[in-house]
Image (cartoon, rainbow, N blue to C red; front, side, top):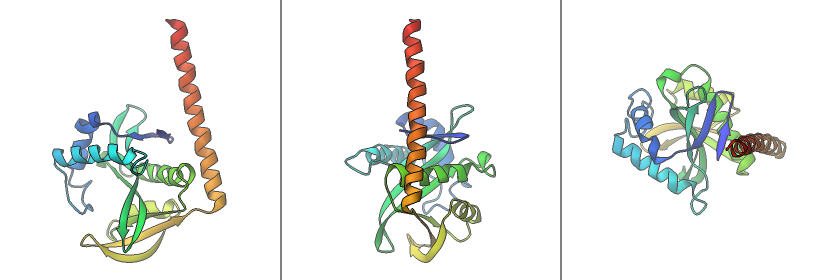
Length: 203
């Protein structure tokens, strides 16, 4: 599965992404608002392995995706959806993302978060998505608000004070997101099929 935005490709992680992805998750600035702080290479490898489990239809069928810069195919972070069984007593699906600091301040976080929102509503048929944000994380608050989320409440979770930002999809929004995403994915598949056909004819 591939999701494309103007500047990014969001695709499923592969274990071979470890060398590019591990330094990002070890960066203190990237992980400033993480509940666990910077990750070791081993912890990042465990994350990539868990992603493979999450992608399975036997599990969730979705998960965190590699955020790849289109211009050079570089992995610059992640974006996507994750399910939590207990957020203040209820199961929730969260929009989340982390990008290398080199790519902050360019609107890429908003681009990735909006694509994740549309994927959840359009492709997966979800009707509610959240983001868990510490009040001090002003940049993530701005991203949440830009993609239509609003603060529902404050909670104490994982020994952190968090705000729960929420967006709910109306029937019209869901239909629009689904149509747009299906059209986009169809265009990608058609383009690839055309390239494949040309390659075969050229052999």
